[in-house]
Image 1: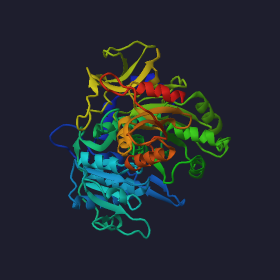
Image 2: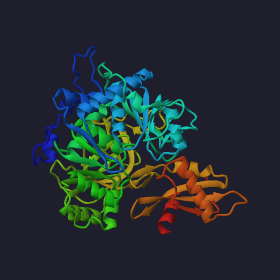
Image 3: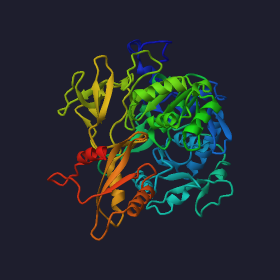
Length: 556
């Protein structure tokens, strides 16, 4: 499945055999009984590399906020995850149960992930900026058994409706709360000696949540049969090669970071890098220089921050970048040209979703025409189509909803939302909700959303989440949230707020509302702008007409 040097996309597709890749990733070290395809994410990401004699390879290089560096080899990841797996098993964790982590980008996060997978349990990421409401819903919905967190985040779990067992990674000098289990103590457990739990390929190994335009976040249980798709993206689009130093700065509390800063590199037996400090232009450039990063991936906001800072001018003279990748929204010509000129490498646009992983990409590892503004060609293993309102396929040049042709997409793994919150598939197609135009040569160009999702700094935010959090404030009668174009973040969240009788809009009240939303949701989901209005535009049936508010926000 490895692409030959300078192999074209069409040649690769002609020889493409996804079953060979599945056989490699799902090969058990024993003779399975009962037929069917069996897999284990730990085995695919760690165990098989050890059996191939590659235990001394470095899986992770971690730099903490004080600049101290720790390395974790595949053999060390095996041994340390066996200890944590034994501790989790002693707490009753079994295959199929959810284990959640709210940890900074640290080796402990990767160890917890691998330990969860060894048991056939399901890893549930929690973004470190989540507030109490966001956590409570996700943990209750998933019936999460264990939460692994750190003392700096521990207070967020005090007032939850659901109280899972808490394992805490203590900072130096920090005390343990009553009832919590101590990570350092549990890591003294005798290592688990039983083999990884092998499960059907349709069994989940990740429990994600994705925002929608209405209602609560929807569950996405990612099955083991997603592993071939993750491998394909990491190898073909990102072009991660043996021996490279790879840094995907996306947070592993979200899909792009979890799928492609951890799972994808581990599948390839590669080395991934964690910078624990928050990303900044100065810090990011220094990290790349210090660690001689070859291969870099980030959301468009990171590239815009680097450009806007002025610190990246001529950076190619001190950096070692070979390629860069971008996901979340298309890059414009100015930024693409700046990356090539100042960072010294090509940056490629990629497209995907939590539900599907990355499905449409400009592939670094395969030769094809690259057009700035296009999200590229379907990832091998996917057939994509553009549909009209009646779900008929449209010819090139006509805008419509991007869809996955499920029957002819052997890499497609999304089987529907975990708790059937929405029906995303119609007449054999998965509907992405994104509007695109197909080009005659097979490329796709992104045109926008056909719903109200807001994309800010690479994060997709459902307006209903924001609106509900705004409504908690006692002065608010109604609210509507939309995206407003922003040069740095792509979009910012703008809220239109109708106040209750007796209240008057002010800067102080707006800041109260912002603070309340930050506490309940997360640091990226609050409205940076708030307009107090007398009423909201609605349809005769009472539905908010957010498209009118988006137009108004663009002009404000």
